[in-house]
Amino acid sequence: MAALMGGRLPAFGALLALLAISVGAVAAEVEKSPPSMVVQGGERTRFAEPGRSAPDFTLLDVEGHPFRLSEEVSRKPVLLLFWSVFCDPCRAEMAILQKAQDRHAGRDLTVVAVAVDGEPLRNVIGGFARQEGYTFKVLVDELDAMGIWKVADAYGVEVTPTLLLLGKGGTVLLRRGGKIREDELEKAVSSLLKK
Image (cartoon, rainbow, N blue to C red; front, side, top):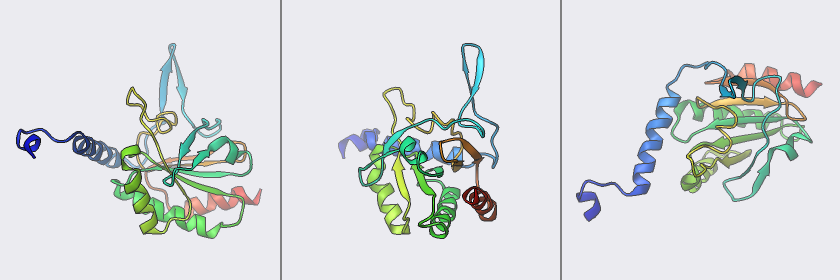
């Protein structure tokens, strides 16, 4: 209490405030963002764009179980969403993801959502997922010592939600920053599963 009265926020509160502000700003970005790029040695390299292989990763789900992308895409296609509990458009996208999960349950599709809210909010993310009744995997991205997201930054995620459809083997078939229409997603998934 004395720390609050001295004008300082607890470290966790400050982290939450910064996270809410940054996620809110990202969520307010335009629906379609330009392709993500990084400059390496004077050349521009695209992240996880259609036609390229998706970077492999291993993250823990909200229950603490590991999920490795390469193991999953070796067996079947993956629908992957980057989202945040602080992002209203993400909540609508999560509902669309759940419908895809329900529609294609038992078929060759894995649905995964990666929360870019960080390890300190694992319980909040898990509680939200249980409250909403999500039956797909919900993972929690992690920040490294340099403040870089382990997975979202490797994928060049600039806006939440960002959705990717990965073919069996890990090739990116679809990438969409911002909201996606349910019928558009269903068309892409159905087309892939018919192959």
